[in-house]
Image 1 (cartoon, rainbow, N blue to C red):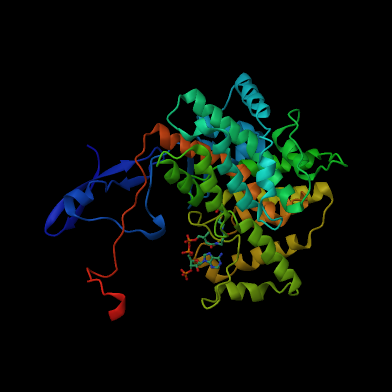
Image 2: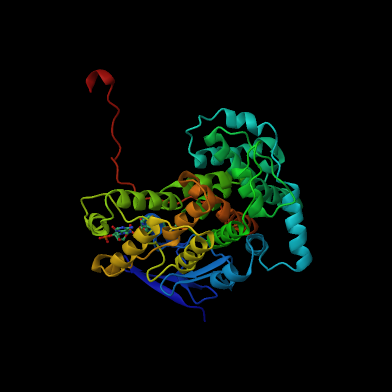
Length: 428
Ligand code: CMC
């Protein structure tokens, strides 16, 4: 017999079905609660609320487990490539050799963006943050591909929209950086791999062909894998909820980029480096900043620390910490902020405040150190996160569409005035 939970309320017993996932996670299905008991549930920040059933990513925050489609993040980061992982997330299975080759070829054929994107870029001041520019450029794709506005087209046409999104995001991301530098854009080169192509578009100039270091390309590929999906986080939930109104994939991804931008989410990677720099410039006194983070009257938080779901460790942070060490060694770079980061981590991990609250370094704590070593400027860090997260957003959007999920529309507990009589302005 299927399990039920009982709710005793107003002298009645309401039976609520228990939904179980494939990893034995359980949820109380409250969807009929309002009709039957005139009750809603309230959970600000959705800290304990499932918004969907999903078969894309599994994570267990207590045990530090993260898997894409059942494959462990450790194994994928070591053995796979970003485009292979993208295929896995979007289509559900690891590709066979010819499937991966076709996927890569399809993507490399669509990397170019319409020449008019240059005029759009020209409209942005050079100080524009690349994340704002990127969100606008991705949304502008709807203007160049108007058929993409209808997500109800055939699976093949929707797939074309998906391929274009993956193919064009590196170009748009690199161009958002070129806009900031007021340098001419660099066109994609379809003979290069996904990461090589992006790095070349970032750093080449009409007067100078940037030669991509394979160590740099490999490190970037690994970072993108680690960021590729993270189940129902703020930006993925945004993508799903925007898409649930039948908005296009490009509009939904653009909204995801905006959600990712904030410093509590993807923007943390930029904030971490700014914080480490500030500690270095203030003489490297790590304890002072730890005390500030603990002080409830100070809005300062240890950026790159803490996570809504991981309460023991973030498995991505472990991989990234090692990768940061490797990349710096391979490139022969000595970055003083790495020492500050390690001191900060070790001091925080011994401190009761952080231990009691389960606050550990998250994916963003060390990623910025790698991006710096790769020559990527600080305000491009969150754009790098967006590049990595794109297949996850697409997979979440596609799953939401294929499951025919209803429009996302939470309820609320109203706490405002009861009905009041309008008072003419002369009598107020
Ligand atoms: N520094 C100091 N105190 C913290 C921190 C921090 N980084 N994070 C959480 N706390 C405290 C918080 O003040 C609260 O204390 P108390 O119980 O005394 O009120 C307690 O820990 C629980 O925090 P919360 O804000 O209720 O937890 P949350 O699940 O709502 O927030 C978080 C999660 C990631 C937004 C938060 O830990 C944070 O702001 N971290 C810094 C920003 C950051 O690194 N974000 C990147 C997250 S990983 C990348 C991604 O996927 O987005």
